[in-house]
Length: 116
Image (cartoon, rainbow, N blue to C red):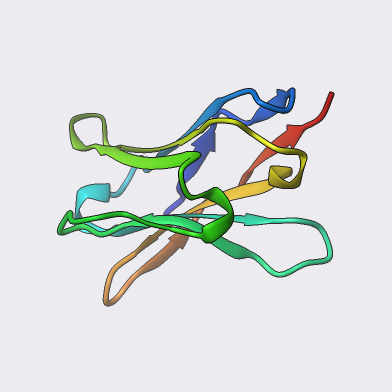
C-alpha cells in the first residue's frame, strides 16, 4: 500500500512557526496534485492548502491565507507546508494527500498543537 509520510508536527507557542513535510517512498509527488488537510477530533477534515502538479498558483483556505505557504521540492520528492504566526485554532492533525485522475493517497497525519 502506498503511503505518504508526514513529519514536522509538534508543540509550538502562539505566534510560532512549524514546517511540515510530506514525502512518498513509492510515488513521485511531482505527478500529483498535493494538498494539506487538517482535522480536529469530532469535526470534518478540511482543506488547508493545495498545489497542482502542473504548477500555478497555490490555493489556501481563508483562515490560513497570508500565514501558510505550500511548496514543492521535486528533487527531494517532498511537499512542504510552512506555517507562520500559528494560532491555537490551528491545532489539529495535519494530513498530506496526493491525487491524480486515477489515484488518491493519504498519509497517517502529524499532530500540530499550538498552546502556551
